Image 1 (spheres, rainbow, N blue to C red):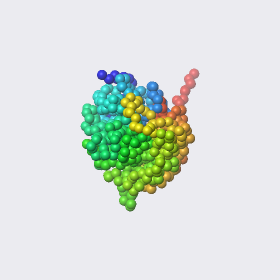
Image 2: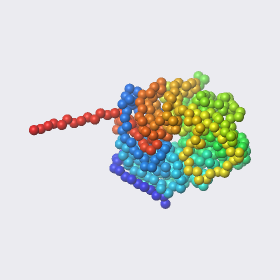
Image 3: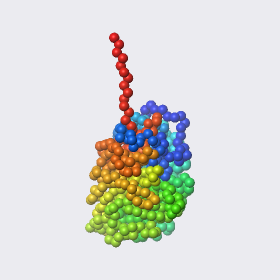
Image 4: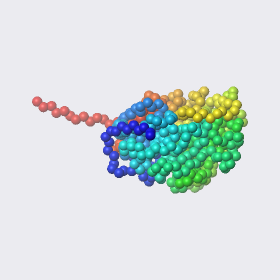
Length: 532
């Protein structure tokens, strides 16, 4: 029996209010119902109370310190005035207007610890994963356990960290552990019971299509799925990125492209059947997995509107793919420090510069081991169509072993790879997907240690967590700095925006706490009438 910790505080819930699939389809408003705000990964809100003209008056409304937290990755979910945030093996419900704890649920018997990126919500339930590869369904109103299902074995080198994705009557979950030897997959669980409805492996079994791309090594080839995906309701297609190959920096026993690692998979949401795939970095030897957001937009292309997927990749290139077929359309550079390839050819394959693989003595390559970007969420401005992406200018010395190491079964997870030799510099950059042109950039001045993303609003604002412990507001058209607040510690998650009782808030997880900001409201005092 799993152990549940339940803390209760008085709070009012709308009677019988439930989150429907159609509610999530509508995208954000007062509520923020998915990790990315909507199914397409646009991460932009229609809320208009906070503007370029008044954002300078924003102030902290509340701070909730998460007990024992360190390096929080959670991107909150908000529904009906309640915020749901996760930490290692636990989820907390917080009053989104006051920061008061409503309830908390902790799995104290989990066999593993590791970072957690957030929750999903559907019906009257919230869902999240524990590090030892269980999916948990709780009553969102009181934290009561409804079901808990194991969907993987830590003995196979797995752990779990991704925010689940709720689609129709399914909860989509992934697995992590690709840096130490495992076989990645995406599972679809019944939202009602937790029963596994389908599973799609990211590494083919021996004899299956794609297995010929693995040479001698395939069983523990990596391809982790530690970031949740996006969804096109029109075609019922999931878009899910896959992790790096294993071993990360030695490819001697895995000759070939190593399908389907460092790729984007387009899957039928009902069956898990693959519709198409696109591999960004064949035979990756630099730990450049594809775990950053596949963003779904429509842009003019050769005189006609075209539905595409935008993807900013760790290998340093910004890709535009046809959404229906996966056809490569264009790639442009995300970063200036890029020396492993001279470009991307007409088929979407990198034009590799010889001599850039890791060596036992070390080989300096750009981008570095953390990549040109990572899980930091981008945002799309619907008025311009521009996309804002956190990028890292950094090189690193990559070293390799001389043979394939043994898989590590007890890896706790949570790291971002070897410590880089070159700290580098973060920039928030905005690109026009129609041309690939960089429109503006905002340089960050911290120690290049944070991993925060962005959120945008209908009033032309972009909020981003910088690498020096600040939440920053910028003009989405110019990149002009408009406001900032120093939280005093690093950020590893993306901000969100929501509204309660007509008041708009912007929230973000710092390393140890949840901060929520809103417009300054002067205190109106009641005059005191003196009597004799």
